[in-house]
Length: 489
Ligand SMILES: Cc1cc2nc3c(=O)[nH]c(=O)nc-3n(C[C@H](O)[C@H](O)[C@H](O)COP(=O)(O)OP(=O)(O)OC[C@H]3O[C@@H](n4cnc5c(N)ncnc54)[C@H](O)[C@@H]3O)c2cc1C
Image 1: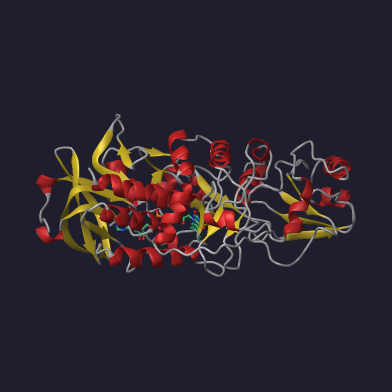
Image 2: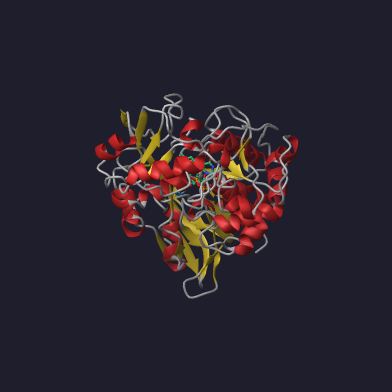
């Protein structure tokens, strides 16, 4: 089957309905963090739940994730480590940081963030009452809280009191997402939720305008159609692997310079099934694109400059924000300029910016990088003059990162797309209500159909306005809502 053969069939066309014993109230397509949370909530609300998972085990992209969740407003961990946060500050920050914020969804997400954290703990997901205080992409310890966004960056810090809100599942280093899936899947199984693995859902079944079931295959063998008495929930993840969908919506990511992050099942099955049913796709050109240049932290004290020798972003921004700005410079080129005291070889930065060379003067860098004569010298001299006074009138970089770059030798690291390592995954998905109901092209919702997680569009929209933990945070949060709502439909 080619990637784009997902379809909706009418119930009258169903060749083989599975036995009544295989029916369920709620059928969920995909067992990642969104699907498992929906399954638990639907079951707790009294529904008989059946999950189809295409892989031989659950987890999806969630299983590859570090396992940060963006939560705040006074969680147990924030309080334990002395972080003072409020729902209002979290709300203001997310509203500012999101390109086209959905106020109702962000409001609910912030209002119920603490209780969502408590629910995850109740389900068995562990979080330590600790904080990693440095600036990092992800803590290599099992410490929980981390600064994972632009909270301390201008102009956000002036409008919303900054607080760290990235909560990592208690797991040393990476794979916090896998740990979370292990806990939530065990919980789902203990509740008697039926899970069928190696089951590839390829059709939705419609009857009198309502989605009433799915058809699936196991190892290519047709297994017929299964009825969903109340609803089908699409929880099939992102479309990062699907080159046809990328061609249509995000052709830039087909450039080999980007290292796309996906599992083999990230073909946008949910997007395609939802679209075939009459749903609308939103923010499909949005992606998390990032090449982080920290750690080491001292590199944040350097400056990012473009081919014109000019700065283009505050270097203390969250790594995907600064990376996105680099991708928007001419020829997608940029360099991180450091001096003797700010350059550090270890530990290696995530984006692996290659060292162009070391230079005795800024003028030499300018020549080597073919920037207009005097341009970089002017930028560095103006930056240094203000940094010496603890100021950055151009981009308002935080005071603690300001130091004159005046000690030779100087280093230029290549931040350009094609040189540094840019990783990417997609963020767009089906337009849904706050309950996860799929919104129909002509208005209203598609009866019996929900979408959550990576195949839905809720809060995360693009890399400039992303904070680590938003995807899993919203996938689990809105997944739970869809589970409850579908069970009561
Ligand atoms: C490397 C990496 C690290 C990340 N780290 C973080 C992080 O720390 N914090 C954060 O918030 N976000 C992170 N993200 C993003 C985040 O992991 C995802 O957005 C989120 O996990 C999506 O959850 P999901 O349940 O929608 O999808 P998934 O976890 O991908 O689950 C979808 C499931 O559906 C199954 N499926 C697909 N098609 C079908 C079909 N046709 N039939 C049946 N089953 C199907 C898949 O096999 C999969 O198991 C990261 C992403 C990547 C790539």
